[in-house]
Image (cartoon, rainbow over the protein chains, first blue to last red):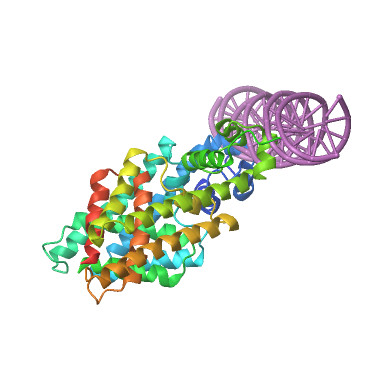
Length: 191
Length: 191
DNA sequence: TCCTTTCTGGATTGATCAATACATAATTAA
DNA sequence: TTAATTATGTATTGATCAATCCAGAAAGGA
């Protein structure tokens, strides 16, 4: 009954994620977005409403994808220690490969901390990481891999905090050795 | 031989630190700065050169002050465990009191990661924290407060990374309990 | 009292910002 | 074919951006 959309919306959001991730919210202009998404402003506003709304949508997409990856890794091959080490190592490798990206959630937390919609997503994302880690640690404890005296919830909160620290120092280009030293020390907390 | 400056430059930089800290670089307009510093644009550009140059100068001031505070705390009453705990607790209290500020260095790392001058300052600041912590840990180890088997450098890198994580989750408004759990777990690494 | 120098702040610059208006194109139902 | 509806992209909006201009004010030296 009407003209059909010429671009793929999911793909457009993926490209927006990439752009916001690389450049941040303020440094990404509407013109940048239109060029990256290959659409005109009419389509943009009809589809996404505003730059801010697209940012929130991109953030949701990012959190969903990254959260899924984390869950998949944690649910993979058992052995909580190598799994946690793998999670942290992959973050370090990502930071070394491209120090300018970091984590979109961390970037949002520091850049958009006073925008309620964004701040809400940040809080949710952090709690999601905490929850995933707590679940994995509880299962590991049930398997006897972690001392019964340990508190999986506290360990999860510690690891969640440490992960955010890795994303920051990764952006500060402190070098591989720095981060690997921090990692080795951090995982010792499970012993 | 010429007209004298009517405002105090150090005080102006202090106010700029406060503004950039609260609002970030992009979200702080020149008009905001002129109003906060109570000067006109002529004086501004004659004195500071540009918005970016003032930001770098503000960042330097911030790093100097905060670095001095950290050194003072670490050089204070001995007992490395309570001292480290005090450092971390003060960060948590600051985040709880005003979650929108966080740490200017962390904010810069995520917002201005690709501006060479800013990125350079961020790197320096992180290494300064590492160095201060390493020094304190080495002295504590010499006093016998930390096992000789521990590596103060590794511990410092770990704590430095963890501190950055605290500043991030503090901005995410995860609550006091979350951060105190993380803290309690982190300081156990010294045992 | 002039002269030179520096500081000051309002006016102005051109660029860029996010967002809107609108004419046209594409689609389906009637 | 016609009407109704939605998508598209260009042109344009008013606002705001960082930065510059410039005329006048304030200081000390001659």
